[in-house]
Image (cartoon, rainbow, N blue to C red; front, side, top):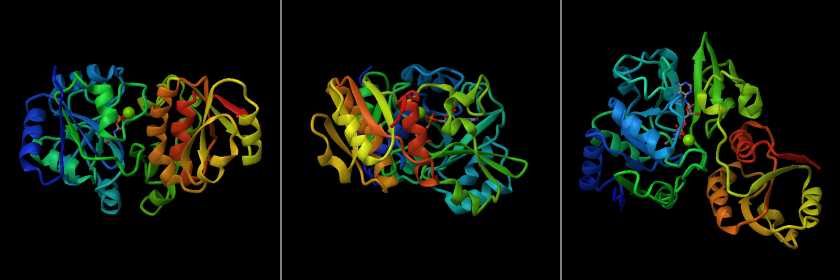
Length: 340
Ligand code: TXA
Ligand code: MG
């Protein structure tokens, strides 16, 4: 298949109409969102979701997120409730995904056989224009090959999906850089299944009782039956071994500088001059969680071309602000952590 790659703005009605038509008729279009690029197909068409799983090489029991242009559009395929609308009034459109009971119209192939469906209303203007042009909700996982870092630019998508899908819409780099916060609500308790840019403290302003699933910070706690199937898979892994160092900056510098092989380091901006023999990549200032989130996946992809024996990075703090970064990087490292 020839993949059409097109630069697009929200005003490019002709391109968006064509992309919407591809989705409505069962094809796949990758598109930008404020978090990461999505790989979109018609959420009502089981064949489209099968194509999504095939293009990504994704296990069929890992469900897809269904994207809508407005929160109330979820009524067509999910049983909503007052808490959902409260959350939407505060956070939609934006990087929040809410798990709701599904209606029959959503095929089980979209939800990985579950009786719930994940709903998200993205804020990126191209994503919103595409959903409107398609006229159907769009099922979309991140547009990477399963297991690879999520794509934060259209060139990442092209690298993974060229020849596998009908179209890639290039709307520039994603602002946030990690995927949306995924939550479920049960008996008045909100559980964060995947942390993102919307942090637990912010959710507390709408639902006072917010908990973080154990598997967010400890993937081995996921067990055989995790609450969110995506929790159990190895994710975001670069080609080289990634090792997280748990210690202060001085210990980090000494450890990296004492290594023998060909190594790369994801360093804080303040310490990029500290390393004598490692290839240094700037992940952002030590206290700047937003910049670090925005750069992480792109830097992990960049390390693939270095053929390093090992990549070192700091183990982030487990605070609200760094929770998404912590969650993604420990998975990328396969929990390979060295205590300094
Ligand atoms: O920011 C995002 O969420 C991006 C953009 C494209 O919107 N999408 C994304 O989708 O990250 P994906 O498929 O890569 O991740 C979806 C996550 C997985 O961890 C999956 O297990 C979880 O959401 N999920 C989906 N439906 C679920 C359900 N019914 N119950 C529990 N977890 C669910
Ligand atoms: Mg993904």
